[in-house]
Length: 499
Ligand code: ADP
Image (cartoon, rainbow, N blue to C red; front, side):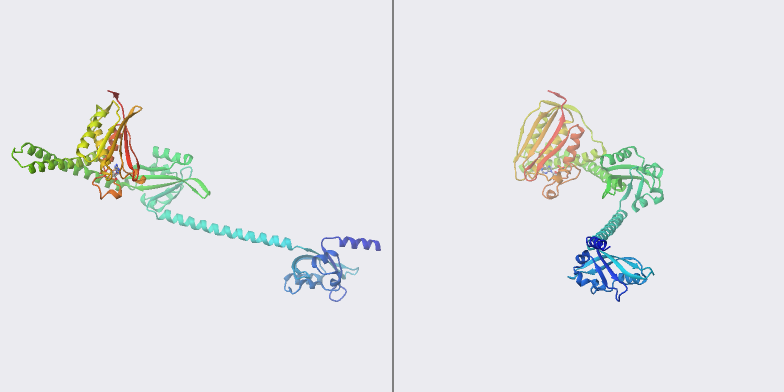
């Protein structure tokens, strides 16, 4: 038996958890046994432990609710398990996971308690960190959700406020949302619109073959639809011209394959443009008629000059003739512009030798701009089928611009050569050059670079007309330029034959 006890004690001493036995028959339930692990965990020696009530481990930390629970279990002679804060001899806190079980005698009286304890400080710390981590993640999610809700509210308030009709479609072209401007403009309700396929909206008014094709390409190719004009007689609002822009949209990876369509009503703008064009055409016609008469009268006067008229009289009459010609060119340009706009420009097509046309034009200009050296090089021996007058007007225009926009230089180079089945004509100046933003616009009607507006006279239509003339002849006109270094305007024309 004694041997057995020795064995048991050895077994208890080699356990990792602290084990104590208290004697409940003695006052204040003192500890009568503790194993080695209990000493290791608490830092107290065997002698400092035996005889004490377990509460010494709690130090001053007396108000833990677990204490009253354990007290209650002990008084009722029940098993219990608690996690309680205890303190080592050196004062360091450790979390004690404590099992207490009563030992009863044959009469059922509790004579002893056995306490088994584990230091679970590390586990508690890990649990604590996990809880902290979890709550910080939750906090972040809450913040992020709030941000998303805020930004969505922000976006939707923009979408609702813009003075342009906006629709969002899903991949099947079903309307997911329509903003107020859309509903008001087309006099429809949300119910009429949301959830319906775009092409079926309001009597299939958007069911337009080319629009369908463009929209179908957006999602697979990501190619937006830009400035697509739709003219349609809409049921509630009448005939309208709409400008459509459509893009594929993605929202922070939450969804893709949605299409945003912006619809701008340009009916009034178109109408204003039309009136402006009408005005230009009428005004230039009206101006042209008396001017032709004036020109004729000046020519008559020039023929009627008396032999003995003073030199000043002749000079003045010549000047009048020059200015009448200039005015004539300006008005003709305006007239051409309105003709191009309405598609009424006439081409008097005949074969002509381009080298000669260019040579003649350069010669004429050299006479009227004696301070500039216009040098012509290259040749093509090509015959072009087209309107010689118009082509000469283009060359005239390019060389005049080259002179006008190079105040600090007196050199213009004209170069002509063959490129495949085309002739290529280039006019190079060493003047002010054109910025890259302006480059995109100089062939537009009435465009003039901002900084030159006041310094040089002009209407901003010469290049527009030239561009259209070359396009009508199946060629292209383009520019290469560096600000401060100069510009080269080039155009091509298809060759008809050699001469
Ligand atoms: P205009 O000369 O009457 O203004 P154009 O249509 O001929 O009209 O030219 C449009 C604009 O392009 C000019 O106002 C000028 O800003 C720019 N531009 C044309 N040619 C040149 C050039 N050779 N160098 C620099 N800028 C030019």
